[in-house]
Image (cartoon, rainbow, N blue to C red):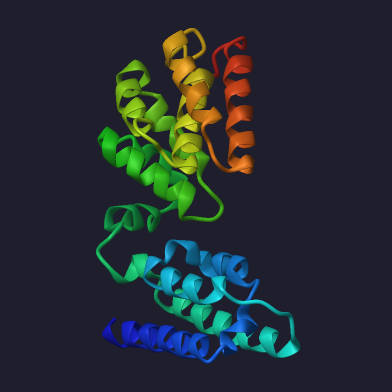
Length: 225
């Protein structure tokens, strides 16, 4: 672990030296690529320094591409060898959960309390590919007893992914007929308000579709499981 962190600091240091010498201009336009490789947007130890280095640059040359690809390869290798989450105690419960058989996930999740269910669900949606939306069901099965907890997640200024994920749980409630989400006008007003306040156009569109789905599902018969 110590060796990997030292390697990460060395790379960041190189980027800072390049920036001071103006050679960092080669890396302009590759911040979005860095985000994609290995899910690096979740690797907070490295993201800030790399973004600072990349954000100021300009230009488009073959040399820039070569340097960018070298850095991307290094970071991808580090991510595969030891993702930040896996090298620390953070998300230990979630990683242990997803380390067991896929086919038993929903049943196993029913054995957790609500906060842990929610944490595992969010981990499965936001940090794994493909996202595991089916894990919304054990939370949704709680019906009205889960509503106050879910509304707490939307208090203040929640990020777009939080709003989208919570909406998926309410959609599952509507589908499973464990709570009449659409008829709860106060709840629907809160959900609509949070969707309207979403900053990212893509997630706002997705959340709007989920709201529409909740309305459509409310008219359907109960799902037989």
